[in-house]
Image (cartoon, rainbow, N blue to C red):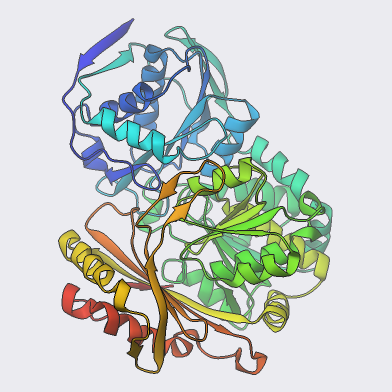
Length: 542
């Protein structure tokens, strides 16, 4: 039996770059989750009788929302739902499942790298039939519908046993509970030389992986331990927990400090990596060397041909605007297209679907390729391992060889989290007002060459995305970027990105923050961060 239940609109259901993210108690408000899911369904056409993929990262409230989503899918006319066992599906695995089963789309329940728990973060994101996040025209339609929604439709039937693999029928709809790992693991075996990686590991090469009590634990156990032979004692925090063990599942040097300390210690493994809440981000650390996400993108692109799935070369490379220009130099040498897009993986989807790029990445620890339409943490780990097995070098040697060939881009991101939204907006507005007169301005030892507010013209569909961040270019090749993040759940996060290109290999061993000191000073001088926000230091430096 289907029911139609009246609901009043909620004013705060505008999706960000990765869906709608709020604190769990917000989603627990009567009708809140249902209103947003119904707004998604009401914004779509032609899904009657089609398949919908549902899964999440296992965070608190995941199972409850999955049961609601299944009942609503039945009432709204979907013919089949595929859901990961235990409610688990990493974001890249969900993307692959949508593509493999030719599903109409999918609901991914995650707040990515944000904390989980009864008072922490939750999120709902809709992905389209290519497996990628919904483009802006759909998220805008969802938001518009959420402002006038007056009812939702839901079927009455018992909870589905999410822990039992099999096919069930309820509400006139087929419900398939599937192994969340196997299809994805099989895909990885088609892309990478598992035999070569296995041989390297069997020869004593030690791999450490921190799943951060998040979604990639089962994937790492199957792929790294069972299929490749990595020592299970070096796969840490592999059991997904609904509060991520009380930790912040963000694979950066602050929240994965234990892994970093291990990799910098005297008995370090040869390779260390971590992934985040929903499995789409990665952290790469070699023995004694941290690889920045911007550098990792460039190095993966330069060496991708060593893996079977990319032996024919790349069609192009894409990076988000705040990501450093290191990959641009690789694209130039390879003679392939280079695309600079706004932040948000959905912008890569058009390029990938059109065959305009093969590998793409973001400075926020996301890299991926045309195998799915999401960033993919374990994919990056496996490509690194394939490259190391083929080159028979350490991470440090690969990094230093790359810098010697292409030059080094010193790069860092300073995050000022939970700033009062009004103050953050005022800072950006004041900075934007000075853009036209900034060229030629001297700040410390640096001179501004040009400045702009980044606008992206999509080369595939012709759409235009404005106000994507402020860029300030300096004479000599340095750059500052200022941007407000759309992935938090409270206040605003100001992100300041700094990069400096250094072609001289004799100057490649500087400490990053010291090398960027003139840019750090310039950021304060130009934006007045301390005066406008009261913050004298960033919350997080990556």
